[in-house]
Amino acid sequence: MMGSGWTPYDLERFLVDAVTGWVNDPPILCRNPYDPSGLYIAPVVYQGRIPSVQAGPQSEITFKAPSVAICCTDFRYKRESGVATVSMPILTWDDDLSRNGYGDVHNIINRIVYGLYQAGIIGQSFILLDETVDGQLIFDPAVDYFGYFLGNVTAKFGLATPITDPGQPVIGQEGFLIS
Image 1 (cartoon, helix red, strand yellow):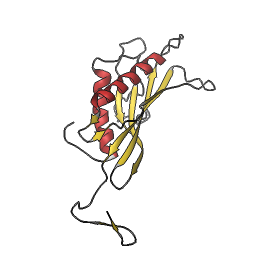
Image 2 (cartoon, helix red, strand yellow):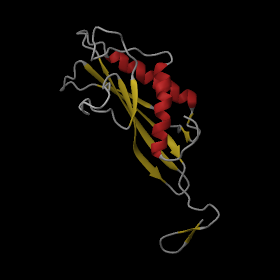
Image 3 (cartoon, helix red, strand yellow):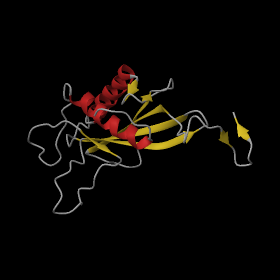
Image 4 (cartoon, helix red, strand yellow):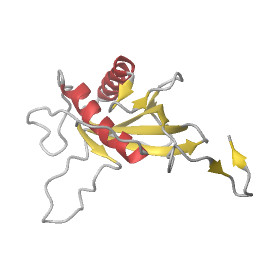
């Protein structure tokens, strides 16, 4: 996707394109829950949330797994800059009783982390901040999600603070000039 953007929503859009490229070149192939004995498939990357498989008979088949969702879960603005926290939940499926399906999640996490550090800037607008990029395999001994395997990547990016007219002084709430 060409061009630039400045909002957290734009950051999500650009990351969908970037992550789609990272997990598909070369493709990370995972088991298909809709055709377990068929061909393996690459993860699908969605903006916001993974669509529901209950979307209705008129909608296309949406792959709940393997998939990655890109969602800006937190953003903060200061006067001169902002920070966006992006969460990238990962869902894969494998019904092999050896339970090695978590390896697909690890591979996707690593591909995303490597891609983020290699790119540094997403969509010509969003700089990966010099903070840790966190990858996590979600494992809860109290809940058995078998044959689904879950993970998450969290990263922080710089945001531009919206300015109405850069040539005009900014007046605060109390009428004071902010410089």
